[in-house]
Length: 64
Image 1 (cartoon, one colour):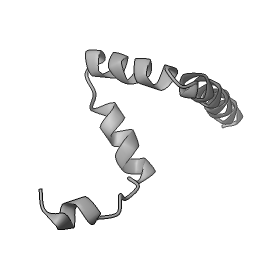
Image 2 (cartoon, rainbow, N blue to C red):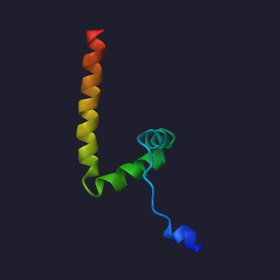
Image 3 (cartoon, helix red, strand yellow):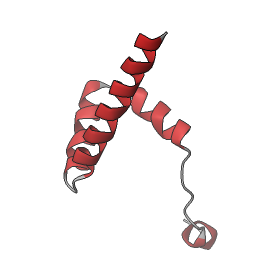
C-alpha cells in the first residue's frame, strides 16, 4: 500500500451504486448485511423507511 492510498480521502458511493450492489447480493450475503445493519439500529430505520416507501408506491399504483 502506498502513501497515496493511505492519505486518499474516502469517497461516498452514490445511492444508485449502493442499491445495485445490494440487488446483486445472494441470500447469505444479504443476511449478513441485515445482521450488521441491525447492530446499530440502522435496521429499524431502514424498516420504517422501506415500509413507508412501499405504502407510497402502492398508493400511487392505485391512483393510476
